[in-house]
Length: 358
Image (tube, rainbow, N blue to C red; front, top):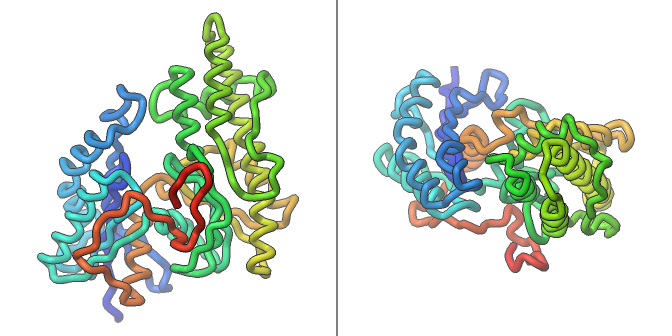
């Protein structure tokens, strides 16, 4: 029997600390042996958002314990680990440093490879942890820090065809929730409140909706919500529900239209036999947006894949899996590599007008 290869993955790019162990089963499918996640909601909720310094401290306080828990859950020993993978970017520098230093330390002590992972690559491949998905496919990545369409041509070959020119979608949800005094994190709060609101109560703008491309803009929508809130003499529960529902409906319309545009571009570039879309990132857990995107399965004859909830949000399993793929191709990293707070998945992507960054 062939000896199993165990990869330990560390994720610490924002406000979740996660350590996971991934291998392959008898059928060569990825198998998650452990995926331990500790969120920092209690650390940041009083501030209404992530405080970078507090996030880094929280990662540092817990990461060694999570390594121990992951090994115990997987029922293996530290010496059984073949390589250590860690998110090296993009993300908050302090948090990235904690995870990268932990990974490099294990690599040095155990004399095993260290593998640097792009956080976005983890999300791009996350659905493969549970489902057989053939390349190429279209990725819609929607999270607190990123919103983009990328063609996943194969492992390690990515072509970004659209992104946001300002705020990420998750950021727009959080800021709207803050305006409505709903607390943190904002996405789940908006979704819950919207269920009992009138989605047609307010006509909100849909930036870039008429442009036949795959680019997003959410800052104008957020500003309109702010103006709407400030106009209210009293922000009653009903008004909050209606604003939340109208906001979510507007987001749904934007996502649906831009996904149609991205599908057309995907077809032109790849001419695929089958059209597959993977929707990943924390905002992919939103059931309303999931319903909106899945409506395209019938109208456009496509297949849509969503990772399960545990793999939508930031997690070590997706990092360990990306590490496993790189380990199998001997794509190891030097210990001298430094964290990259800004790191596009598609290194050849053009600079985004309005953001000044890739």
